Amino acid sequence: MAKPAAKKATRKTIGVRAPKPSPASAAAESSVPHRLTRAQLIDALNKDLAKEYSALIQYVQHASVITGPQYDAISAELTVHSNEEHQHAITLSDQIDFLGGVPDVNVADIHISPDSKVMLEQDLEGELDAIARYRERIGQAEMLQEYGLRRALEDILIVEEEHARDLQSALDL
Ligand SMILES: [Fe+2]
Ligand SMILES: [Fe+2]
Image (cartoon, rainbow, N blue to C red; front, top):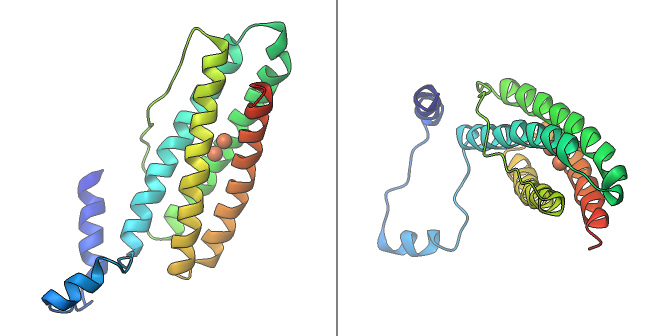
């Protein structure tokens, strides 16, 4: 998977003349955000996709295993979250394809626990990470004038924020 992506990155950046580095421009560059390429955005979206797959699996497992009368409502909600993570994976996969990339089928780390409260903390950690990643990704889509992608990412972000609020209220935070 990594090899074709690297190849594509090279192909897509051919023809872009890099300015000759000078000590002055190197110093200036350290304070200026480096220009993102389309290939780098595709790589980042593929990492987001792997985390959507892991979130959907993690929610399926947690919804089944979580126990305790205080967690009845959130247990049903975790299944809803799982279905929404599945929708996010479909959206990201389509967007990666639209951008000319190949959607990966990697699954990121999955966190489980025998403790119901710890499960919810693991889920919340994943949501807060997703919120931070999608905020960054929306800015990157904007930078590359990919407005359709930006809109799709904004819709995902709204749902991740709802997920985080559901978990925070179940955890009495
Ligand atoms: Fe998601
Ligand atoms: Fe989520």
